[in-house]
Length: 132
Image 1 (cartoon, rainbow, N blue to C red):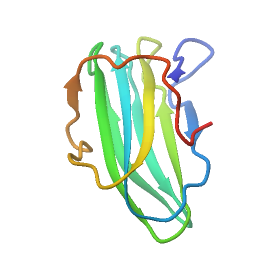
Image 2: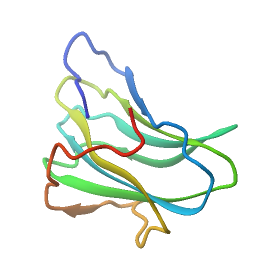
Image 3: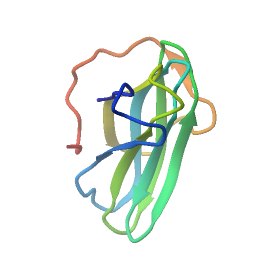
Image 4: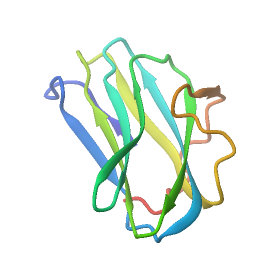
């Protein structure tokens, strides 16, 4: 997935990608790859949504033409959704892309909400689990 930042998009415009409902879990790992390249990059937020919306991941600014891995452990006693939000930055020189989004049973081995791990580019075009 990719958010285009060229005209007619403006500063602060948002794009959302929401999952289908996910069943309660005692521990699942949300994993995704993201690319935030360009001087005009805005922000990528990820929310856990049930009766409230809780931001569980946020990254802003230019990180170069590299794919970074994000993962967050999810625990919930009620059904919930995951929402990815991309916010357009200062100008058209910056795009945000997502790939290989997955929710798997078990806790994540490494949380990357504060500082992402730079890794090689993933294979593009893989199926997306529970998202539309």
